[in-house]
Length: 207
Image 1 (cartoon, rainbow, N blue to C red):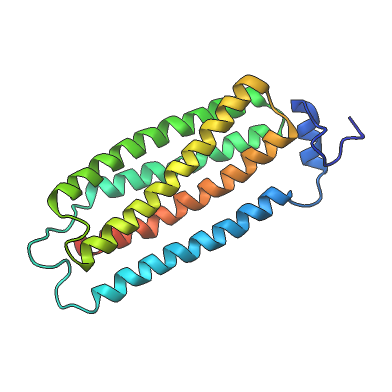
Image 2: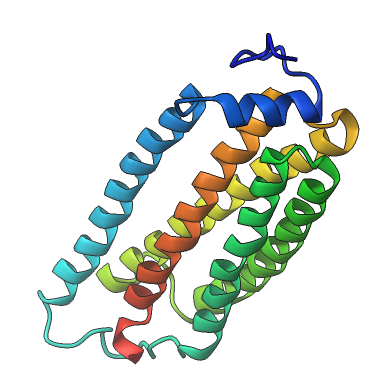
């Protein structure tokens, strides 16, 4: 075990934990995800800037005939999404400590809550779609683009989480999967955090 320092040779939970403790730098996957998050942050920044640019080009926002989205349910769902950061952190920490069973439980719990969040968001999305079409005007276009972009990022995070849950259940914890847990956790922290300004922008006319 002492010969295992950084490579994918750590094929057991204990060896993976030791490798994580002895590592002096972040793995390449972590840096790759960090760069991806920077690009995605720029994307959301552009979308929100576009929203407010369009807002201040017109005297009335949303345009006449469109009721602002009630804020209660979107805000509550955002709180639920942000709260999943806790089991994500606990799952990542359990993986680093070489406790695959605890890591699996926390990650599976995260995935279950995310499924609830996504199902509820789809319901709200469909409800809004039935009220006004995305092609109706500038407001509806940027509104649906912003909401859909964040929803797509949640779906990607759920797929990554589901992959990890299955791999931990069937193959145990290796150094490769430990890095995967850390990288996916970093991505989901970003998705949860960016959900706050997204929902505040979405609900700007109602607040």
